[in-house]
Image 1: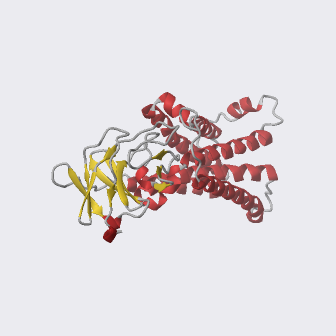
Image 2: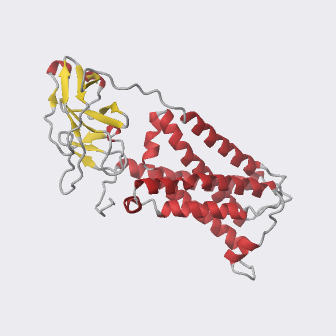
Image 3: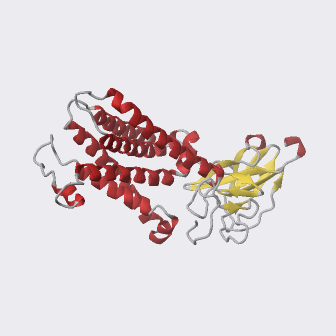
Length: 348
């Protein structure tokens, strides 16, 4: 659903993304419940409730780790970009898995407590003066609250209502949430000195996330556009795949997407009018560019969404000199029609 509550096209990739996530969660939980009893200490058997608690807790942590790895991986290698497009779905599922973990905790440790389970969770452990035995439950609760806020505001309504800058800052809560989750697992399993596996898992995940972010934080060496005056060389016609685009930088923070389709060339802004999604990474289907993030459609020749939708994006003029494509860096007003450049038969 768009910010104005109109249906948005759900592409096949979205169904596949969510389907694969659900299958992986079910497989992980099933494998954990089946294999964990085989490796546990027979003198300290663990019942089914505790196994379920650990299965869902570890699954939520692994999912959160993968979510934080997707961003830097997508920057380092464009083949990871499809994982980035629907990452909010990943986050909502992670929150659901974490809530299931909490349900196991409350129903096992506090179900017979003389005080309400939530109150018992907060006051049962108050050993704040030492590391071994520290009330790690509070870290887990903080991480879950952050996850609930992020999942609850993941809908486009909140992006539109809060505005992009505030919405983006709010969703940076995922970083303190992850730090709290690491502390929750590490401190919790420091109390089980015979089985430090989960503590090692938490520390290893934290090192992986930090390492990837440090590597991806290196400034990209992106050359400034060259060319004579307002015209910027793009590439040869043969370098643009059919029904796909070549992305070209026109200036600081400004990019265009040059699409090839049906023996013609057209150029539009690289940013979708919905959430600045990367239009140049989409493709043309049924005569329209499909944004890979949420399926918004635009006609390549005028940058307009087909009726009844009213979104518009800027367009650009192109010229073809021999086999070389060039683009005018001066953008046209959103929705301006530009005659597509015909590709000679010899170049098709």
